[in-house]
Length: 523
Image 1: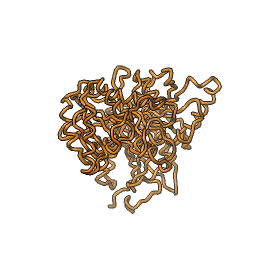
Image 2 (image 1 turned 90 degrees about the vertical axis):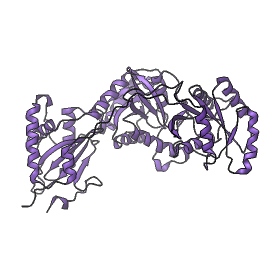
Image 3 (image 1 turned 45 degrees about the horizontal axis):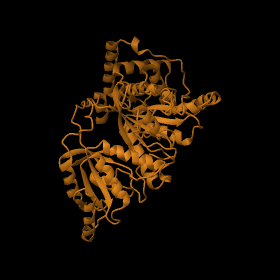
Image 4 (image 1 turned 120 degrees about the vertical axis):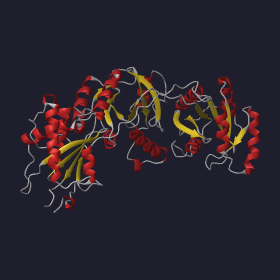
């Protein structure tokens, strides 16, 4: 029987010849834990010679083209990003429910901003890279601006005003079906005080009959009103042409992207654990809306923050309430965008509320980051609310519930007071360093040789699988491929993963171990 005829119920989807482990299982693998390996004690040249001999031995086994490609190894190194120009910033403002987020999606050409037929869905100022007719710019969606409001609505209005201050030009959106309101007039007054170039968009004009009604908006004194339908795309080209005429080539308010590009960090967790408060604390100012109403954040918010003398992109995300298929409306789309933000990030900081019991949602968020293959840091927030008795039980609780992710750095912080937030950078650098780490083929095979000699795979069905060769196929996250003469059971793969961490570190990153079963060629 050839190796291609083997089947395995634990094999990963899409690869019937491989067994995969994402290294999130517990430590109870049933194998002897006495084995220790010191990679510094291995002579690199001798290890490489041994690996070369093992590789030659693989020639007598049936290998696929994909196997050979893995053995050749390596990924092309990503080119470092150079310092570019500061892209001009165009902010979209207006009162609630005039269609600002719908216009953002129309300009971007995709459903990026959360849209729902109720006022106040957008709350933060959210930035998106955009392009029109060869012009690259940054588009900023804002929450509805209102006057004489309190609570969360006041915070939303403040963020809209900050967006205007940090823009090169403004796109003012009004509702053509309603006409000029007192709030529209107050928005115009606010814009005049800031002396920014303004382009006026009269939205919800779905046909020629509405264009005559749009002329009344000349009285606002903001120049020519452009009748558009953000929902159907009507008039968008003329509006963007006008916006490009007032935008400068280079922003007068935004900084150019830093050399090399900052690392991207997603702040994730269930609702009301303090993600937005932590971002504001790290930034040293109110960058995003914070309120004690659960679910304040809907859209992922990117902010460049300098920590430890270097820039980082921190992404504030919507809190995950429950399983995605059980949510609806704005919460449903916010959950999808949170998942996308995790996948775009390099490291996820999962916040849990130290003042409350760990929940199933906390565990699910952690698993979400692991499944996405992202580096991981667990931050226990609201430490200022945790008394001495609670700290003892919290530590026991975390050890019990997070036994599967003991490899993740854990820090205790208080976003409210700033306590220990300075430790976050060290934890991020540790996890990202492990995420980028590569073990040379020589050292890996020296490790595997000593491990198998000390703890061989048990005999099953009269056969004992033998590890033939191992290589690290990729980083980000680290993925190891082991060629073996038979299937390795799950407990033994967990044992290999645990010993890999002990020998080579990998603190703060998931590890994937794939086992490819290959038999000798027929003579």
